[in-house]
Structure formats: C-alpha cells, structure tokens
Length: 355
Ligand code: CP3
Image 1 (cartoon, rainbow, N blue to C red):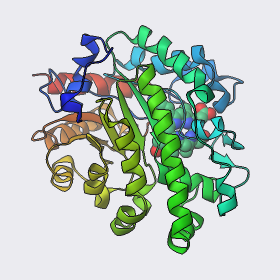
Image 2: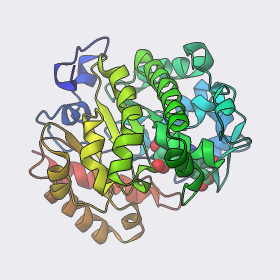
Image 3: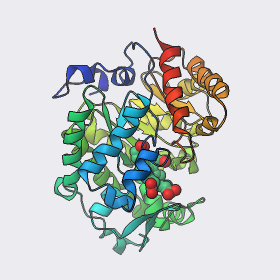
C-alpha cells in the first residue's frame, strides 16, 4: 500500500487533511508545509529551561516532559508538523545497551559491537520496553489537535555506525571494515537493527504518529554500490514492515546526493534532500511518484533576514515543478540558531507559497 490509498484509520479528518500530510501524499496544498529537523532542542530557551539538570536520555522517558518539549516549537514557530522528542539511540537503550548521550559529543557506547558474540546483546524490542513512548504520544495527539505528529527512528546503517564505532566518527572505519571484511556479520547486524527499528516505528504509529521519518544521517559516507548491496536491504525491510499502516514514510540522510534514487527505492514516500543538491535536480535523481523534503542550508539562518528569505525563495522556486514538497532545512537546526529567525522563516514559506 502507498500513502495515496491510505486508510484514514483513527486519524482525525483535520489531521489527515493537513498540508503536511497532503504534500507527503502529493496532493494539492493551500501552502507549502514546513517543519524543521531538530526544531525541538537547544535553539529554544524554553527547552534549555525544562531540560535543566535532566540528562538527555532520561528526558526521553518522561511523557509529560516529552509532550512539553515536542509542543514547544509548534507553539513558537507555527510549523505544520511536530516531531516526536526522542533520539535515535532511545530504542537501543531500551533493550539494555550501555550507552549514553554526552553533551557536545553525541551517543557513546560503552562496549562497541564488533563480533558475532556481541550481536547477542541486540535483543528484539517489545512495546513494553518503551511504554513511555505510547503514553507520551497519546498525550501529544490530544494536545496537537489537527497538527500531525512525525514519529522517527535511526536507520540501521546510522545506528550501526554508532554501535560499531562506539561513538561519533568522521570516517566510520570500524563499521566499514565490518561491512567489507565480514559481510555476513554486517548483514546480520543490520538485519537485527532493522527489526528493532521497525518495532520502534510500529509503537509510534499505533500510538498515533501520522508519519514516520527514517534518519540515515550518515549514509552519505557510502558509495552507491555499497549502499545498494549492504545497507538498502535493511532499510527496505523497515519501510516494508510499516507499509500496511499507510502513513507517509520519509527517508533522510546528509551528503546523499548520489544515493537519492536508491533512498527512494528503499521504500520511501518522501525523500529528504540536504542543501547540496537543488530540488529540481533532486527530483530527476529520485524519479516520479515521490515527494521531496528540504532543503535550506541550516547555516543560512545565521545570515540576516534578507539572505534567509532570498535563499528560502530559491528553494521554493526549485521546488515549483514538484508533485509534493515539504519545506525543511537540509539538516537539523543548529543549537546557536536564533529562534526568531526560524519563526520568520516559517511565516515566509507560508506567505510566499500561498495559493
Ligand atoms: O526536534 C527534533 O528533531 C526531535 C528530536 C531529535 C533529537 N535527536 C533530540 C536530541 C531527533 C530527530 C534526533 C535524531 C538524531 N540523534 C539523529 C538523526 C538526525 C541528525 O541530526 O542527523 C542523530 C544522528 C542523533 C544522535 C545525536 N543525538 C547527536 C549527534 C546528538 C548531538 C550531541 C551534542 O550534544 O552535540 C544528540 C543529542 C540530542 N538529540 C540533543 C537533542 C535535543 C541535544 C542534547 C541536549 O540537549 O543536551
């Protein structure tokens, strides 16, 4: 099933008819919908305030706090979608892996996964492992009214990059060494991660998420042939596992210009594009039948209002011939971004695209 013949399910009509979900389904929209990756978080003073003294991963297990943090950017910026406040490593923590998010560093894994014996530490995820997600999404969908909630998860490759390296990396040499040197172990690792990721997305959809985004943030490190052979099958398995829900499936990575076609092929309804490839070129690479999301360079927000508007207009112009366009940044909001610049950008996109 594709997002276009989706059952409406329990979703309120106003949510189903929102500009964001319509654009994902490539239906006509009253204005180009806009949301920002990492719209919740350190760019917002109200976020820094409620997070004071609470470690990142602990904050993800408190439903009231998750609800408040998810709503903050919706209230402030008037964006067309909320993204569930969590992190890509939350399901891995939930199955008992010893990992943490170190401020200014990122996810750090105490004992990296490097051998076949290590795989045993990756057990399946059950809904009971993440009861706080079900609870938080129940609260959120009540509070959000018609605004759709995007659920998300890390894609198998990006999760594997943290698990095998033990933390953030620029070169992914340990992960790639496993991929090239022990393809069977690599395939088994990615297959396990696809099961965990699919289970985590199912929990979010069943609790009320209206769309899901798979973040394969670091897939851009791979050559297309390696992506196709060693990564695409695991991501495709995730998309297949949630296809029957009929909610739009978004697929995003950074530096993935050469992979855009394959990322669509993996099973996405919407392909996310970073700022390196203009959307009129991206649509040729992705091919027909998919919407695109993106792709303003997040550093543009550090320039003045006129520069932001000129660059946002370039994105809208490049998207003019698309069947479906969701405006976003080409990667997440940077922590030092002026939140007022984001509010003005959302207003500009709405005004300039009104039809
Ligand atoms: O608003 C949203 O987008 C929802 C929240 C969200 C977070 N992480 C919260 C978070 C989302 C969608 C993510 C996904 C995520 N996490 C990705 C994929 C998206 C991307 O940026 O490519 C990745 C690679 C991670 C791993 C991760 N978590 C990193 C690299 C970091 C930054 C570390 C640092 O401190 O610089 C985190 C921490 C993190 N995740 C924060 C937030 C709000 C900051 C932690 C804090 O506030 O202390």
